[in-house]
Length: 328
Image (cartoon, rainbow, N blue to C red; front, top):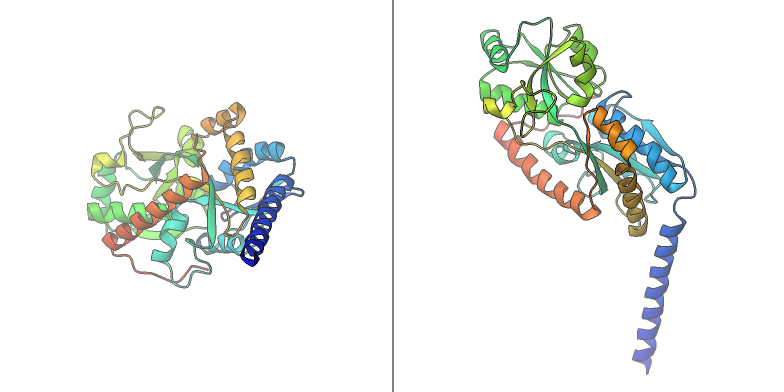
């Protein structure tokens, strides 16, 4: 009888826990939600999340506030997210490479990207490109390679931080091509465009979404699309793979929460963001910016993270990059 009594109490406790978790999910949210963007305003991550946040707010019935916290190669903002209370009210959005490559690139990261954050959903994908200043004579990737080989370290290439996908792509590209260039990191992609226009830097890896307006008005030039195939709006621009220098990294923006956030809350957020991303107005806004919406299940984004972490290790070892201190 005592065994039956213990079993009964355990079943009651379990059922109460399940009811409590479900109720928590149904009650969520009852106040504004904050989404941390670890880059400066105006960059690709900032641009992609704002129209989605507006639509999500309508689905959740609460404001979704964007907070830009740039610096430290995203670790300032992402660490703040990882260490926040795991209640669903503090989220963060970043490009996937930050989580995949961080542990291989930097010493003493202030949080563990693999264990301190859980994925909620993928947000969007945008094709990227290799861009150059129009003050330089380059018209093709071959022009760029020839100049860099003849003038070692005379060219500056800009990225939105050491160890980001842009940095690794340029490093992989230049090493494959035997081209020496000098790395100049910036706090986010936003400041890179003016630097390219003024020829402060000569080369950069940017999303088409970030660069398209300046590409259309002739202030910067694209030499190659970093994607699996040529882009419909830029049919004459070759892919980097055609030059045998594509590192095979897939870039997308993902939404994350601190590990330990209750499953019902994660499911509520996944459903709300998925519904927002499927709205015609959001898709039209994304398309106009050359983003492709990419909602996913919670399992899909977290499985992808594991695969990306493995690929990041392979790539950094192939390039020979050694961990460095996080930039100020």
